[in-house]
Image (spheres, rainbow, N blue to C red):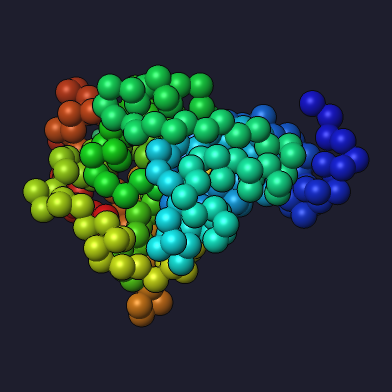
Length: 266
Ligand SMILES: [Zn+2]
């Protein structure tokens, strides 16, 4: 695929990068990324992926835009209130970059439909707000051997990792969260609040990780997790090991390893 004059100009600041170049940009244009959720994390992630020229974006969200979303879900404007998030997102992303084809999945993902929804994508970016969805996405991503970028936020904190549980030495999301926490009574943003820019940081960072994975730039975040304390401006990176007892990705023949510390926030 040759880049057109328009594309050479649009992506000039990518192409000039040694780690990207024309081949990296062509790779982005040929890539298919599915975003799980078009909310606080999915909004900035989708905007950056579309602007970057990721050629095929899937948006999975069955929700509608409400007034209280607008404080952080920057894909939408006041005139979008009441509209389908998927339709509004597709319109906005198409306006940013005509190189991007957007598929809208207005459906709730569950363990029964996850594999069919994820199949055919090169990378999954999970910005969903509950453990049940994240675990179903993870199981399907491991089965299909698709890298999973997973971001989550709390009121003043964020976490981000890339999961490749299909590799013998990398954990999956379920290695970290073996089951939905008992108190999962889903402390969503609606109940706990969140500073909008925290979602912006984590969603943008998730888009960055997606692009690094797609173009194979630098060292993968798989096997590590970024923890962001937004209140005190502290960022840490911790190692994540594979859980030899993981029901999704464990290999019975593997040597015993200690379980990773469980860090999970909604
Ligand atoms: Zn696992």
